[in-house]
Image (cartoon, rainbow, N blue to C red):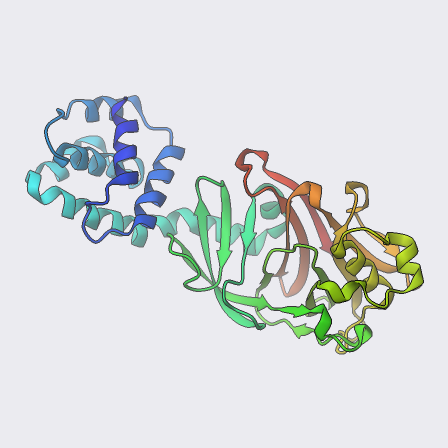
Length: 339
């Protein structure tokens, strides 16, 4: 096995590295796998002789990290690592991995965060994302953690301490909680969340509908989660349109025909982002007796996400779909919902 590949395998499984959690080893090893490593570095690592124990592996790992991630020149990296005795290397490697998390990881993720906040349409059209609420059940201001998952090739947006991974914190976030359909007494008077901050995220949509009212810098939105009550007392027009289809499709059409917010934005645009049964229906359509704006997401395109970002003081709303378990498929569908 080539020296670089062997070194990356060692980092993945080196549970003997002191004070280094598994998530960090996996993240650093995955990062190294994505990089184009110079043949010069491959040659330098192969010149470190194989020996009993893991000292030589740790020495190779430190040189590889210094050169490939920290952009240290190879002679300087070799000199820096040469000062340590074999029995010191595991602890020093552990310290180096922690330094990658503290210093190198922010440099890697910061450009993505800037792109997301300043040019969200371009970012979301070209980068797979996964958003989550973890244990958060309500709506409110949240500091989200932005991380990169090498194996899934996507950016994760999670509330604080949701998962252990290398990340940076994104200030100004707003978590949109879910509202169970059965708890809504009047579909025309759903209590929406008045969104504050720079961006709004909610957990993955699996048949759910997003109901929103937006006007420039003002946004009120609700995330309605379907349950069996969706199929009770269904209006005839909805039954004729989507009767017998999946629960999420029925919910989306009920929102079109019956949905409304108790606290809409004054002069705002009202719309729905909900599940549809065909990829031919995912784009903007005006439906129902009120010609309600509806954008759709289809199960064939994979997992669906709703994202809102305030750009220059005005809200921009997006929908993205991707297939979580198929990292090489890219973004399967993206659309700008508003404006």
